Image (tube, rainbow, N blue to C red; front, side, top):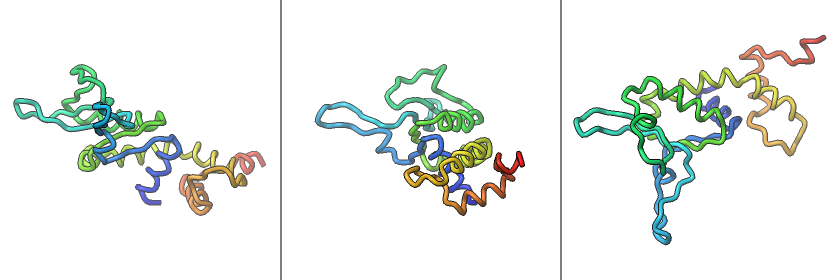
Length: 158
């Protein structure tokens, strides 16, 4: 299964989304003269006055706090971003180039492995429920069971 599909499955499972569209993160309502956003968190790269690159990680309407929102090193960001997404119900804006540079895709793929058993259990449980919104096709479910050597609880006890 391709990495992109694994990430799509993981994000659907936890109820989170990633957008690379800055208009979703920062929009202005001209009628009410206020900014509006549906985005929960924003990750951006900024330059300091003396030319250093730093990273911000915050809600788009929060004020910038040096000790809480600014990162000089990017090494902690992929894990923090992934944690925020897998905690669930998060819409995150990150520029597409920054997404690639930080290796978010690789971190999310690693997290997919941590969630795979729960994903398979959920899909199995609702297998015969036509009203359940499945995130896997039957073929994908079978493929993941084989790839991750998942054993049904029924087959384990017999």
